[in-house]
Image 1 (tube, rainbow, N blue to C red):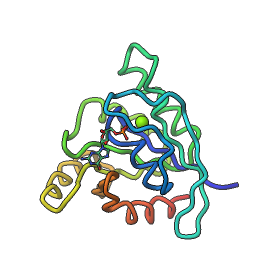
Image 2: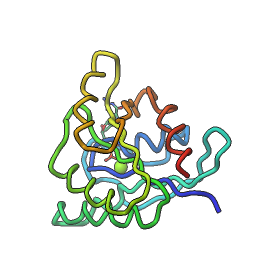
Image 3: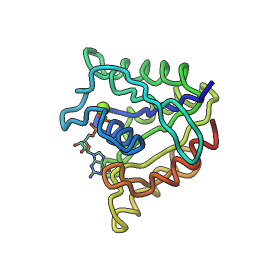
Length: 162
Ligand code: GDP
Ligand code: MG
């Protein structure tokens, strides 16, 4: 049995972009409109000799009216079905109330949560990462899903927990 790693986070933080980056091909749908991903999708992935299942949880964003409760249950389902979670936030936006709700649900699960701060596209944006220490999830990993920056270090950490 291979481990299951889920990418969880608010709409538009870059979950599908990260999944595509990890897979090395474009399969998850990336859209500028939040909530556009239709299905929960699981892909076979590999990093540094470790096989795992990678889940893009964006599919649960669609079709739901109450976004707040939908997001909390998305996080709940995601932790239930996975062995570890990459919790993705948007470094250009900062910490939101929704991030805080989701992280509460995730940490209650007791499963390994790795905090990744996306959209840190270059060195000049690096300082945006510091704020996320406040989430109390340990070291925030600055990444750029779009350019691949920091994704290797993130995966080293993530597969280590599987
Ligand atoms: P999702 O809703 O969480 O799956 O987010 P998407 O992967 O669909 O991305 C939402 C938007 O953020 C798209 O316009 C992406 O191109 C953009 N995006 C994703 N990753 C990055 C990144 O590392 N840097 C920047 N600048 N934009 C990104
Ligand atoms: Mg998506």
